[in-house]
Image (cartoon, rainbow, N blue to C red; front, side, top):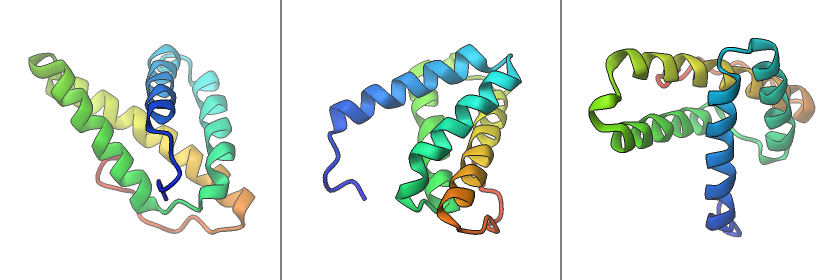
Length: 110
């Protein structure tokens, strides 16, 4: 899946996505609209719920390592909830576009 990936570019996209989540965390309409756009962009990748689960785990791991003691249980819970919402919307939109059914159980990162 990442054979032809420019990781510098991917890191930039990931940071932009985290910034977007922070900016729109308290604006659910905007957050959902952005998650829908992300889902459309990811539709061609045929991602499974496991892919989203791994991404969520990686996000939480990165935040834990970056924030250290500031990554409190409340902060972890907030990020877990935020990621779960975004991943759910992305999976649904991507599934509609690709024709896949969204039947996988929610991930542990959600």
